[in-house]
Amino acid sequence: AWKLFNPSGRADFLAQIDIVGKGRPILDLRAAARRCRMKPSCFPYQLEEVVGDFHYAEDRVILTDFRGRHGPTQVSLKLAEVVLYCNGGYRADLYQLRADNLWVDQEFLAAVPPMVRTAFATLRPDQPIRIITDLVLIENQGATQYHWDGSAAFARTKLQCGLEASEATGQIALRGWYDGSKLLAQGNLRLDQVTVAQLPLRDVRSPMRVTE
Image (cartoon, rainbow, N blue to C red; front, side, top):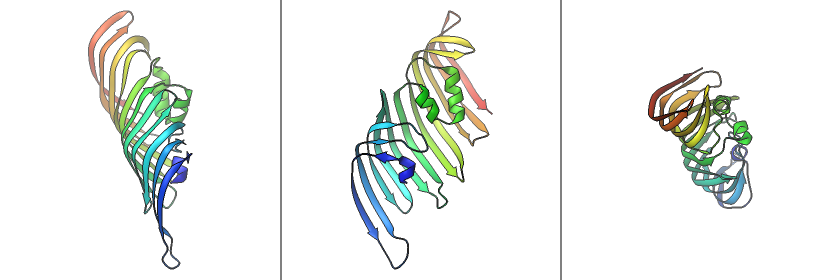
């Protein structure tokens, strides 16, 4: 659990350890992060001023009221439930993961999965975006699966879509999964406004389907 979150700094904690005979000690740990630092192994993106409440018991971690920042980017998480597998893997269910004022820079691109990196590196938004999603990560024997249901919103942003799109304001919503080799995502695109080839457009709507 410690390696998964990689925290450093100060925290308040309360621990109960039960030892019965020669069996494995039973640990129940509650900790409250107090503006510490964190760089999760599943998303190696350095976060500062982290606050949140952690509860570890019976190979399960519950995280609530999580907040942190990366430069101007504000990151928050309503709830996370992490089940730790005996072989070193895990399943993490993240609910209402949110990043506001998120700049798509090299640090962000280096932290995200390859398919997300390719998409953002192609679009190259020149303004910060907002991402809100539910996310499931399953890591088992070195392989990682991703399942998500979320959206990315942007305002007056320049995007590279074959033709350059400028002043784009709207949202992309997608639900899908990626297992390291196969990708399937479906959703919709909503553009309140955009300019393509000097042609201003309004109220653009389109379904989306992404496969690999």
